[in-house]
Image (cartoon, each protein chain N blue to C red):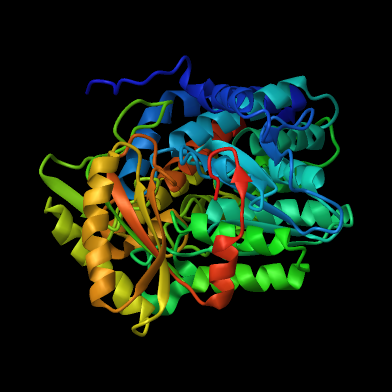
Length: 335
Length: 202
C-alpha cells in the first residue's frame, strides 16, 4: 500500500514541531511555561480569583484544543500525541500556570484514556492544594444510545460547550457555577458526523481504516472510530437530512426556540461542501420553527486529513445564549 | 537462578524491541476497531521505559518505577496510565532488592494484572488488555511454567475475538467489534511472552 503524502519532517516529531509553529504564529495569544512543552497557556485571561478552565486531549484535531485557548474561553490546554490523551504532567503544568486560586475545571471529550490521565492530574493537583473538577463532553449522539448519554464521546460540540464554560469563568463566576453551566451546555449540545475517507497518522502514513470509494460511514468518530453504519455515499441534502432528523429527534426543541449551529469539516472537506450542507440545515431548522442565533462553518474540530463533516446544534436558552455571545479572543477563534 | 537489575534493564530493552517490530501490525489491528494508534503508543512508551530503566540506578523497584514514569510521560493515551500503574505495582512486588529469584517474575506478572485492574477498572471478558494479563496472572499464581504462562496470555488475547467490547474506545462499536482481537490484549501477550523468556534465561 502506498504511503499518504504529508508535509512533515519526522512523524514522531510532528506534534512538537507543530507547537513550535503555533507559538511562533500566535505570540500575542499563547505561551508555554519553561519545562512544560505540552502545556499551552493563554497570555491574557488567567487572573487572580478566576476559575481556570483547562481543556485538552490528543493532537490531530486542530484548531481543537489549543486554538480555543484565550481570553473569554479556555485558560490553557494540555496537548497529547496524535489521537492520544496527554499524560497527567502537561495537564498539571497547564493548571498550575493558569490557576487563579479559584479552582480548576478540566473539560475534555469522554474517552477512556483522557479520563485516566486527567483524573491522575486532578489527584496530583489536590496534593498541591488546588481543587480540580471535571466535566466530560458527550455530544456525539451516534456513539451510544440516548439512555447511555454518559458513554457518548465528545466531538465538535466541544467548541460550543467550552465556549459556554469559558464565558462563565471569564465573568468571574465561582467554580460551582462554571461547572453547572458546563454541564448544562453539554446536555443541550448534539453532534453527528459522516466520514467520506480515512485519515492517516503522521507516524504510519497509512489509512487508519478502509473505506471503499463510493461509500460513507455515518456516525464516525473524530479518530476514525467506526460509526453506526456504512452505506453508499449520498447527496449533501440526504446526509444533512439524516443527521438533522437524528439531532432534532433528540433535541425536542419547541418551535420558537433558538439554536447555535456548527458545520464542521473533519479536515479535507472544503468550505464549499460545508456551506451546501448548511443551506439544507438552515432550511430544516426553519421548517422546525427554530431560530438560528449563530452559525459557525469551517474546520473547528478536525481528524487530520479525513474527508467528511459533522453537524452540531446547541439548543440555546437565555443563559447559554449569553455565554455564546460573550466575547472571546483566542489564537484561532474570535467572537 | 537470580534475576538482577541488569536482567530487568535487558527485559525492558526486549519490550521496546518487540513493540518496535510489531508496531504496524498493532496499528492495523487497532484501525479495525479503534483509532489505529495502539502500536505507536506501545512503541513510544516502551522505548521511553527502556531508556529510563537503562538510566536508573538502585534496586529492582527503582528500575520499575523509573520505567513507569518514562512510559507515562511519553504517551499518556490509555496505555500510559494502565502500564505506568502496572509497572509501579510490579516494582512494589519486586521490592527494594538488587535481585530476586527469577521464579518471582510470576508475582511480577500478577502485580501487573492488579495494577491494570486498579487503574482501568475493567473486568475479564470486556475485550481489553486484561483478557491477556488475567489468565497469565492466574497461571503464574498457580505456579505454572514460563511456557504455560505465555500460552495462557496468547490464548486470552485470541479469545478476545469472540468478545463484544464494553469498555474503552471499541465499546461504541457493540457487536461490530466481534471477530477482531483486541490490540491491547495482543500487545499484552507479547509482553508476557518477553517476561516468560526472561524467566527461562535469567
